[in-house]
Each structure stands twice: as C-alpha cells, then as structure tokens.
Image 1 (cartoon, rainbow, N blue to C red):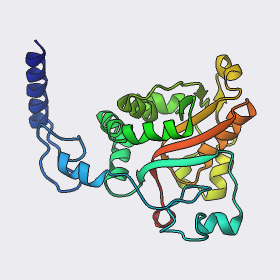
Image 2: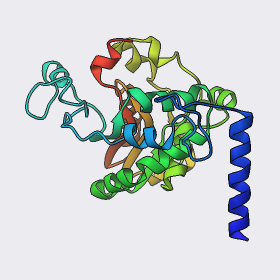
Image 3: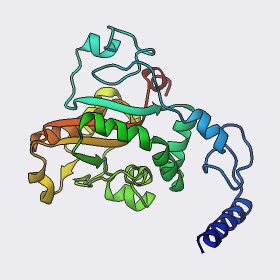
Image 4: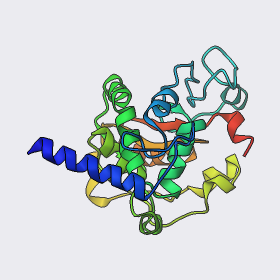
Length: 254
C-alpha cells in the first residue's frame, strides 16, 4: 500500500511538472520530478549551504565583509553597538539561491519551498538549540493583513519543515511600513511597539532561554525589538536564528 501511494504521488508530481513547467533558478534546467521547486537538486545542494566564516560576536555579521577587531565587525566596533538579544546564528548568507528561494516563498507565495528550506537547515538549527540550551522557539509573526494576503507565515512553515517544535506566543497587531524602504535608524523606529506577547503566555517566560526564529536578518531591528519585549517579561536569555543573513555590502547595493 505504501509503495502504491508513493508511486501515485510521484505520478501526480510528474504530471504537475508537465502542466506547470518551471526552471531551475541557477542553471535554467527544466524542473521535472526530483527537484526543489526553485532549483534542481544538484544546484540546491551546491548553493544552499552553511556559511562557515567568522562572525561578529555582537551582531553576527560575517567578518570577512566588514573586518574590525578580531571578533567584532567594524560597524559594532566604531558605533559601540549593543542589542537586546544575546547571540545571532544563521544558516547561510542572503544572496544567490538562498535569497531567490526566500523571495519566491514570501512574495510569489511558493509555500512548498518552506518545507525544503526547513529540511535543509534542520540539523544545523538543532545543533544551535542544543548548544544554547534553548527552552522555547518562537517564530517571528506576520500581521493579519500579511497573513490574509500571503496565506501563511513563512517562519512557521519553515520550522514545520525542519520538524522543530515552536510556540506562537507573539502577535503583530498591525502592519508597519515596509522595512526594505527604510534606513537603519528608521527601521528601529518603524518596529517599535509593533509586537505583543499573547496574554496567556506572558507569565511563562520568566527564567526561560528563548530563540527567535526568522527568515532573514538584515539590520537586526525586528529581532532587537522582540528580544527587548521578551526580556521585559522575564526571559533570561534571548537568542536569534535566521535562515539567511544579509551582508552589509549586499545591503548597500539595494
């Protein structure tokens, strides 16, 4: 029976590939049967890989793109930056295939990509959770307007793909101006007061180590705002994990 179901799924998948043709975002090959929706299997495995370079101990920025002190990037060193969160971890950089995949997930509403991303980062995320002794994982919420328009919260869908338990105790009552249109300083102001903790969860944060999960880290404004909120309600430690991190040199070109 299992074999029959698997064969039927493969047949349906092949038919859908023929009816709705798509092509690899890297090599341009026709995506048929075994593929990852935005890329062929080979290109995905070659390009959606962990970043292994040295990172800033304060903001997580790749030091190779913004060198400063031995373990601090130039921006944090010169501006003496501090954040409400205690650490930043991420799987890869926001460029090339990872950037394309996240954009297709969010803006083209290609929901199956979330499952693929989740499976790709799963082992790495599990290692981080173990190393940091995290008690709770909370996905960054989207507003009701965004949820209605997109149909899903991409951070929750990625965690489902990674098979990581999470608690959706944050809410975003309204939609602020798009962060991508704002400067670094404006982004911090734009998310101030945007998030809330659901009433039924407010008493359960005391003494907990919490990990904020998001798809992309750009300036850290969203993560910093949420981390401050969690600590005001008693969280002992707040860590950040994102699928992608935007290097400063990539951000400056936008």
